[in-house]
Image 1 (cartoon, rainbow, N blue to C red):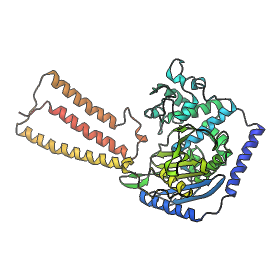
Image 2 (tube, rainbow, N blue to C red):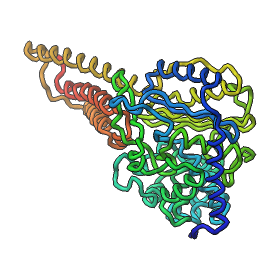
Image 3 (cartoon, one colour):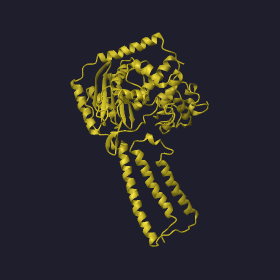
Image 4 (cartoon, rainbow, N blue to C red):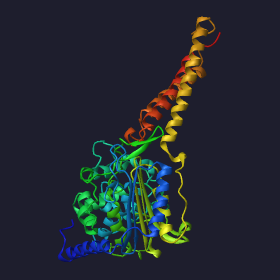
Length: 480
């Protein structure tokens, strides 16, 4: 297990804290023409996409060029958003998990190219299984062979053991790989959940404690945490999502799992992080670090980004139903941008690109509207409307059937035959199957779905189950 910090380690932590303080001491005052143009661009995005609140920061090398906050922390209370308002980072948490893994590798406690089962034997108990080939480097690059559909093997959404990484490791034994480790890229949260378990096991510290004392505080990120209750005391932004066409506070508590998500941070703290990365003061990681596309060390790697005139860009976005975040770094231009939005609008990365392009002296894209095709509430409305039409059709047809019974045009008869019986069984099985799917049996927990989808999907499944059940019943009563 890792022991307490050595004197040299303590000096390194102190130097990082002083460096972070100097970054903000050097920041020029806000209000230059460049920031005014960015303000206009962001205000356009806010208006077009009904964004309640947004905070952002721009960094050039060691210098924080500016931090900004727009809108409100909560639509219900009208409290203003600030650059010190924490927000759920969602998948933007992954770069921090990667830093923790790099720290362990640097100390010698972890070999990135040795099988994970050597450190977590319960994950893959038999050496001859495919999982025995998975290394920490595979996990860092999402090349382990894990599937996204298996993300819910890890408890979530208020289920027992939701934050138990030991339980997560045991549950992940049930997953099946979709290919040989290292053969291809497939983004899946369980890669970083397993990395968090490695950090916890090798350090001997609870994962949130390790991240606070070894990652966040040394970087000067004093308002960054994995603790939901702590973030609430700091004024955690209220999550928002579209519900039946209107942006409203979201009741969802589905924020992901340790390692892959759950970090809460501010635009100010994220500016410190990006400045530390660009200045090369992050232990084991910096602008000169060689990364393998398309993904490495918690970043999507684009060697030649068209929107930034062919520059190398490292980026990551985070999405939950009530929030949307993005951070990006252009090492060759020494630029970093972070955008935090307290609504699930799917525009944070596009906004970040627009901000970075303008900071680099490029025109950048104009404000745009998020695609409705990617909006769960749009589909919830569509499914609900379709379900209502189906049930209306069922009601009209049921009235007609009732009339046929009264007129003697239809009656129950005993019909024999294997084909007829098989058809009835299939129809009933499909009807009950849809009811189970609508109730969330065998699929992701209902709490992990967008709020309006929790109503729309059971409604849709139930309406078609009624149709199938009616068809099965009427096979006993043909028209005469």
